[in-house]
Length: 114
Length: 111
Image (cartoon, rainbow over all chains, first blue to last red; front, side, top):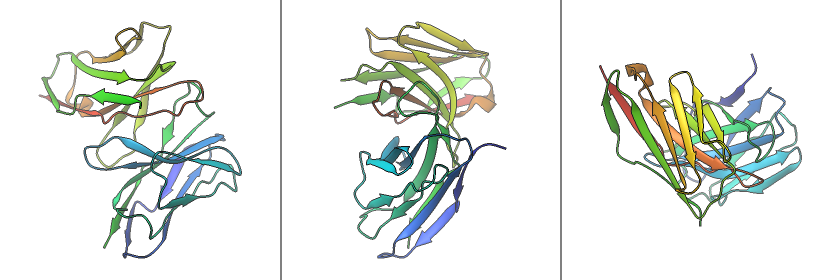
């Protein structure tokens, strides 16, 4: 089955630690995205990648880092510099950047800092 | 800056009625607008896309309108069912601008 997979579903992190969230897609999509969702708020864009080996900051990139070494993979690292990392993180992909094509989302990773 | 507004309050309707959700945007001229459904603890799922030159789009019990003069999109679910209960997100986008999501409206269909 084609789709986009995020892992793990739940993640607990101690303060001061970096943590990496995985996102893999087998849809052959060029564009991939990371969003953060907080209770009662919309999706806020953290980083996006239009093509392999290229990525751009979104609206709330501070404290996060990404890489796009392979077309199918777009991992997100939440660093200790992120002041309030507890949130629901969503990865998405689409056929092309910015065109009128739908985005496919993973099931999300809920990160909790303990 | 770009702003998208959806009713932050939950919408409660009786089963069988038509639900109408509103998406307003400002400082923005999107070429298209998407609607997604999100269930609790899950990622959004794409429902419909409407382009700026389309006034209305339908898919089964769903209907979307797009008024570029009013800068507004309406999302209708006819003959609503309890299974339609979810949060619905609008997402204007276009050209090489990033797709931006609204905060969503929570719909509760009461049996």
